Image (spheres, rainbow, N blue to C red):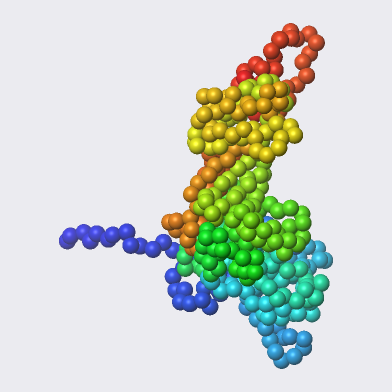
Length: 451
């Protein structure tokens, strides 16, 4: 009898959270809610990280879905998607959860009703989860929420991108102690990364993007185009936040969109800053901060020249000749692209300092020394790449061009830069060399690597 051969190529592995059978938006939302809350309950580190974001104490986590409440003692009922309860000793912390997937957006009327329920029952927080990314970490993406209802109820928003980023960091970088819990969290990550889950990446600059982009290019942008400005500037900041999550997920660290204190407190002021820049120079700009790097990455999208520029500033060594200081920098960038632009700043400088391409500076360090007798105090390293213009994602898209520019700049430049450190004081017994401060250094970033 001939042996029957069975092909395994089309076999579908059994999954804890399957994507098969999702037939519509309601099923997608229900499954995503249940998956998230169940994994928060099951994986200690993941559950604690998320509940801590919402102000919960460390304690026993319980999660529920499809909870029903009456509104103000009437027959009217509301059904939030879920509820999280954390118990520590006699203290009980409770939060309602509302979830949206795909392109569905949170609705202010619904959130106001849930805030009423939370306040009536003495709950601590209302947590929303959707694909919306707020331009400001301290501002909810849904307009029209009644602030009076939030006096005793904290409102928190998690984008699905942020949830996925936290899940990856906990599993891949920080580590999950229990191997079974690590597998469970891996199943959630696999689920959220699947297109059918409804957990989407940031993928659209909005309906006003093309109009504003073309008006900047043609020089016809008007200050009266307030609504168009508001959408584009808000989406640009959302893109910077998404870029931070995207990079942080890969690096396993908390990368953040950095704003001034005034911009954080007053989102309208931040919008005005971007509006003035668009009107005056056609540039959208922002900053992201990566822990343990020499400085923040500044990002500028120039809609007129259609370029994206990333730059970082680093203090020059405080000892040695100017050529020594230039060589100290170029040794750290020995593998970086020669097309990088390097600028050198001196004290009390007016305007921009001397600037050359890295290739030139490598061969001619003196090309950055233009003011004799003035010491170089700071360097700026910049990379400029073509800007995509399409509003969505994919080839020639603005979103992907910004993400690629930030990722590439970190890989080529930022991760290799180390701050200079002063040498330890010399012992009186040690021989003193006339040119000790100009001795060649073996390690970039330390005083001994200056040459």
